Length: 152
Image (cartoon, rainbow, N blue to C red; front, side):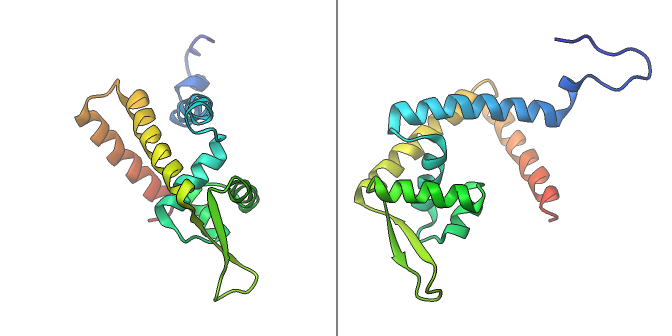
């Protein structure tokens, strides 16, 4: 790693919180993708979409994109892949003839439960280095940052 700058120079890149959050996200995504593939047979994006559909169904593609933190195109492709795998059903939306509503099938519900158990395990693996009290404090700080960034 590069050395710390001296004097009035800018801080080293790796000291910025945003940089470190990005590193945590990249490592977490890499390891989570591997875990989702091995445990659930799904790539990360599809697993996240099924987790959102299982939690909030019925969902439109737009709602899915928001819930899974994906853009509409990614959400649409993942939803279609889940439909083709028989894990999600699509029904026409009564209020919007062009829209569809997504819900887990029986097999999708079972896979959703696998995913939630995996998310809990991954959460413990990632944050297990913190005490329960530290995890609660960190969670509260993240909630404040998220609310601030969302303008709330």
